Amino acid sequence: MLNIVWPIFIIISFSYAIFSGNLENLNSSIFQSTQDAINLSINLLGTICLWNGIMQIANETSIVEKLMKILNPIIRILFPELKNNNKIKKEISLNMIANILGLGNAATPLGLRAMNSMQEINETKDELSNSMVVFIVLNTASIQIIPTTVIAIRNSLNSNNPTAIIVPVWIATICAAIMAISCAKMIIKFQKNNK
Image 1 (cartoon, helix red, strand yellow):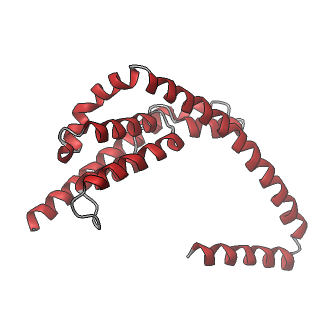
Image 2: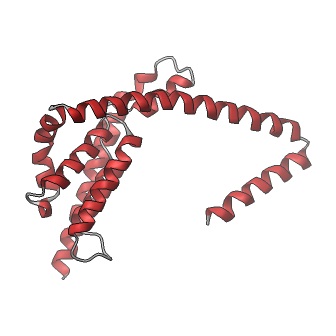
Image 3: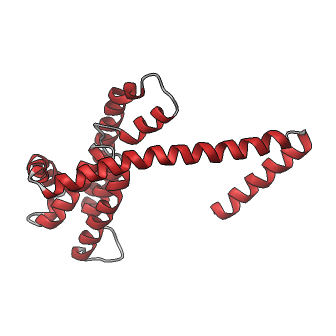
């Protein structure tokens, strides 16, 4: 679908620029936006490298084990089907830690690894298990303590106070996670009752 939508937007933009006499503005904005995109990518790359390195160091130490113990009661409540599957619980914990630190790029491969592990123990391979559904919802509405990507973007755009969004991000992500998980659990319970 996007293969159709984007070319249409591009054709409309170019046509409008030609007929309204703004072709020069369009041309300069194309070059300016590519320069901005490269600068933003370089800024984000540095931030991502820093936090991925910190996550790698944390993974090699006992810090991850301690954080997993803190998250274990929450994981036990959210994923009762996993019971004593420590491998999957560790993968979920690592994904949650990466999301809490605002490392969406580091969380993605960890999340994929957790989903693959849950799919291996899934009895019906063509349907998502309850744990997989809750994990997708949790990962999507992830709680962030340090929104590093947003802070890096605000910093690259010369914000006077790039960290001013921390408290609103806490409120928004906590509310989103609670609502999303509550809805997912209610739907799962509803489906169980109707079977």
